[in-house]
Image (cartoon, rainbow, N blue to C red; front, side, top):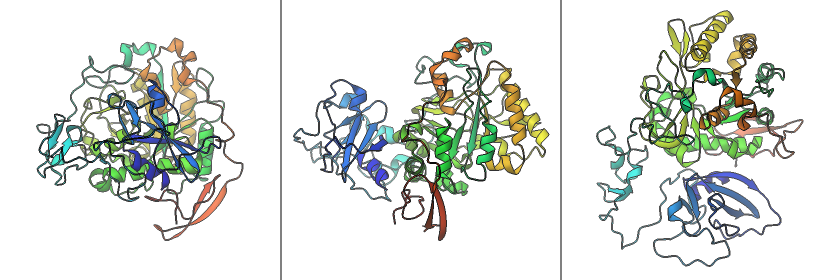
Length: 535
């Protein structure tokens, strides 16, 4: 679990991006993170840092707004970092308050998300700073950590009184004077169009998303839906977002789908069905192991760039309250798409979690985030109406029994978006469900019908966010950079012609399982807390 360990050793505030061998660069094999050159006032370069292990250099990048502090060996707020010009070759003299943490000192199964620089005797616990609170057990913890879903006090005191009257970090209602694009978006009831634009002058965006594994059984369905003749008004092929879970996933096919320009997002490693586990029992560490672990697997066995993995969806839409979003904030995820909006006359637009969510949380068992998580987008799920009833996801809906009924429901829900505020119309599918119920022709028919409209665009989740950051009228969309045709696939990223069929023993399932990839086979079947298949 090399990447997992590296992430932990650095800080919960940073996210591994890529790994590469650079023969021309001499690794600093001293077990410390380093900066390769002086970067002056360049904040982007100062957020990058490196680690050398066994002759291989790993590159990391701090989350937005943080810089790498080479003395403390952590990512810190910009105002607190004044050593961007210090490189690996410099001699360091640490004060007692700047003791660096050792690399790889943390357990692979128990993660310390609050690893802080140790206090000294000159900082007794009873003298907490202005931005800290004192626990009943005596420690001082940052106010920002109160009611975030993770116990920082030894006695858990910081997580005991999290009702609206006592939670100092409770998200406040939307304030449009403080929330401005491109970094923040909210509205009073969630239905307002970004940029104060008129609905007639914006595109009707449709996001096709697929949940669960990509397999030999369902790749044909995916190929049929995304035939090359189905194109947006700018002549670029339509694309989708795939929320990939690990069990039975084919990483060779995943790499090919990614090569074709589709977006890859995370749906967990185990996809375990125990609702209460996700809602109440899963800790921040568990969410990390499930979601970042799956990102590591996709990076390792499908070569998907870590920087391209931006979002996640909770299995069965079982939200993890503030714990889930704390993990997302600290490990660089940009969006979630698990929150279900209540039925309303107008559909809701996505929003950021800088402020309180603009609706109730009944359909997520009241487990929506209550704290503010600035900069994280929520691609809210509008209910799928079927007659007088509604479902959160079409593939989980029991209210239609025939293909014609499904088509009628698709058209009805599309018109509800198209004729009101043109909030993005989300069609959430499972390729296996599409195949089982024989509705691929219905989906193809619907896509072909709506593409005849000049203002309908099929976009990925990330393309949707890019538009919301920069609302662009219909007449300028042909030159909208973020919606141009797919990037060129490099030889390093391109999937092989024939995969390696790795026959591996699974300790969890107690049997042999196959893993299809273009990369070297691991020792055992990758799984939760062993994503690299270490024997």
